Picture 1: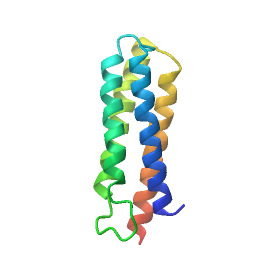
Picture 2: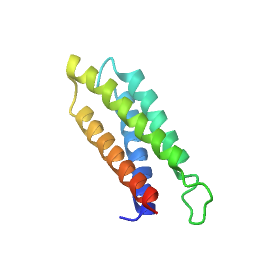
Picture 3: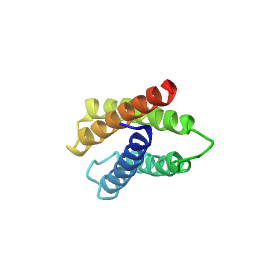
Picture 4: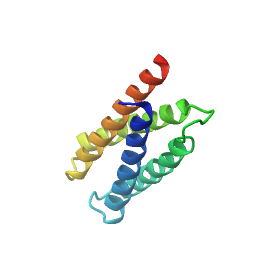
Length: 118
């Protein structure tokens, strides 16, 4: 995959997971996790715009920082959310969120390898 395709994939996944987190929080599907889910939903949605800001071809900034920040946010979501899930259990929505986080981290790593190889 080309770096721009990976970047668009990351943007799309961040938007999807951000909205998904907010929906689960607002519908109170995971009691007791509403506030953390809402915070992460806002973070992921905001990150999608941060990663997108220099997507256009010819941008002078390669966006490495934005991709790394998105990967770190997903990793922290996996660690904190995973700990809460292991400790308390939860709805099937949480493992789906974890899978999206893993996909974002993987796409980000692929993007970093492709951009670094140039």
